[in-house]
Image 1 (cartoon, helix red, strand yellow):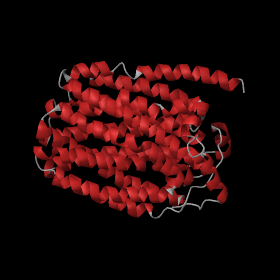
Image 2 (cartoon, helix red, strand yellow):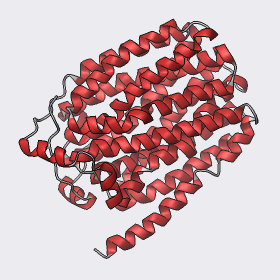
Image 3 (cartoon, one colour):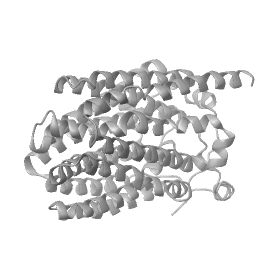
Image 4 (cartoon, one colour):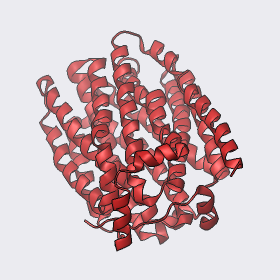
Length: 430
């Protein structure tokens, strides 16, 4: 596999000056064939991801009836990528990112078809094992997918590509969860697993269309010098470190535990479809719509400008907390859907804009390792969050847990605000 093209580090201000006016979303898809192939692969791959999530969660709920068992599923989905993320980041920098994405998709086809053999409660161990393998392999995909984005876009396209990629994740969450919930509710989990496997195969086909430039000898020497520099670089640039911590904060305090709670709400409170599969699909659907709409609307104000992006991240956490407040009373399914929609708007803003700041500031030669480190923290905190909430569901009412969760997003909002005040003083002295 060939190595990546070396690009020197540029500040957010430098990139903004070079970028000029951002392109439109349709223009980007129409004119940039490399991004178009990447985007098409993302579309079908994400569709299958949400089929798998709904099918797995409902299958475990039906076979075990245990909140802890559901929590274990979500914990595995978060912890499995954590253990491979540091290695995945190095691979995303050392090897051709396009072929790394294709290989992970092909491997995931065979793993997902293994879910077809899960039939009864005695097979739960197999579902857990396959989920571990699936998300360990996915741990190589995510950092490479994030790191390749500046490789297939020009500077003035980067912000648009990031926002469109996040919106696509959200739209496919909405469609995939809704269709996956209906498919699982009407035809069973096995059908959903089969469709999931086909989507990974189609994604690999699309990714073959990407063309990356070959690396120069100078690039190879740069990679050799930067072999283990991600943590050192983040220690020397604390702003990069704090930006990279946002996804971990979102996972621990806003999203991962909420995913477990949603399964319990669908299964025990507002049951539509077999085991609440359709109501769970509806919840994920509004989550996807909210997380897609939030960043798109906010970007009309922020553009790709550094300071507005930073301010919006704190606002995103506050919006997320408001959504939890609306959800917590469990007045009805409509109120739960509205609360989930608002919560996901806030989480989407914090997620997308923190990614944008990293894309603008992280140097290409260690970008994969920085995103790998970010992904490792995200999966670790997500695993902790799902494990805690899964255990609490067997001890406390879901309404009590939700009220406790309403305070948590305020913590990163306040800490980020304090860091921004300190960072602004540092920048003003330069």
